[in-house]
Length: 565
Image (cartoon, rainbow, N blue to C red):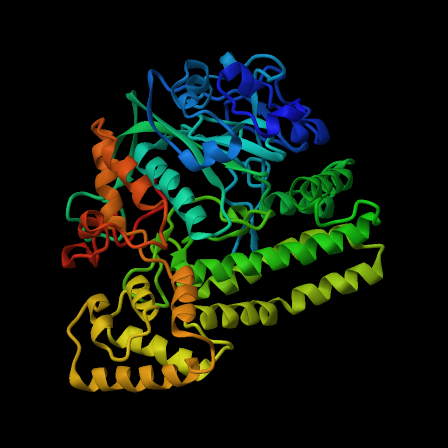
């Protein structure tokens, strides 16, 4: 256990890092009774009960350091030299044999259920019953306390687990670079998210994945690409998902085994303890705590989606197994950021319109419904609490809309939501083929006419459109007149509307160069993304504050991509 002095000191060595270990999940929850005690459990199989499976990750051969998050290291009190310390590097590239002290010689993987847009599925499970779906390539290797906060550290690409469904359990460098950069960028944007600790790669091991050939316009991958295997470590207060709660509720309903109800109660209690204990009084009855959990998760989920919409983020695949029960962004797979404004923007070729940019609030409501349904299983004998739970679910849409209305008002510096004004603006953005980020950032300077906005248009404007813009700007300024000083409004809007965004055509060269052993571009992007509300230096702006070139529209792997990683 960490000592009280660790709250302000810096962790300089791997031995000191080991002293932070504190396994709440392993001590409070139940291991799969059929699991191997030593964690050597790498073949796809059914996991019929228990909350986790002990698993040893598969080490990367000759791992090479790519990058670490300066900000997260500072937040955890870790010395930056640790990133290249031999023991630390080996652990976070999959070699758990270096564990020492109270650290266990294995990690853990968890199962969860799959629901696709609110419909329960077992087909993706190789056994057809849901007992084989879960962390197929994610292995948690550490849980501990750092400066008074609990964090779990999970390898993505750490090799196969019983949930691997026959796959190799690896992640390619391409997807690892994207997730590593995106998590810290989202944190800098002020969006609740899992975090990035480290990124290591092996040039001695490669894996084949479907991807896109150069200049491909195909919607689906058209070639098999060899890519270096990599492991990025993501960090969060917990990695509990809505799909996990669903899994245990389904087992109760199906009477899968005698301990099913107890295991559901245990994981919900653990979720409360891990992610909501500061807000939920533990002296309350368990049914009352469940209602409080549902209330707080709803508020967090609604706030999260509002942030996504504010910064132009589209998750791509937002089913309940990709929805963190702690209410933050998790699982950066086929995500993207809206450049050319399009409410139907969807970077994932397999996602459909239901996961598109402006449909994310509805997708969140669907995930909340699955969470609500799982929790109701615990309240069968508690009608008052069930009624309150039902009301939370029924009013989700209204609460979501209120938060979105407030978000749009903040983006425009308005004291309250003005639906006609905002609706007309969105129509103008579409008509002008405007860049979402550039348009709102230019509006933050309170322009009197359309001219400054044109730097964010992907097509030339015309007189008729200019007149519509100027008329809209005039009405907007009238609404702003009573909202405070001009400088205050600009400052507030500039804290809401980022100066830069994620542009996939600028990320691709970073992972392509990294595959050749050049990590300079990855590290430069870390610098670029560190302060997204501040204007870039002229030198960086020339490279990173530009509109997407014409040749990248419709380009496979840039404008759209599959789940392949």
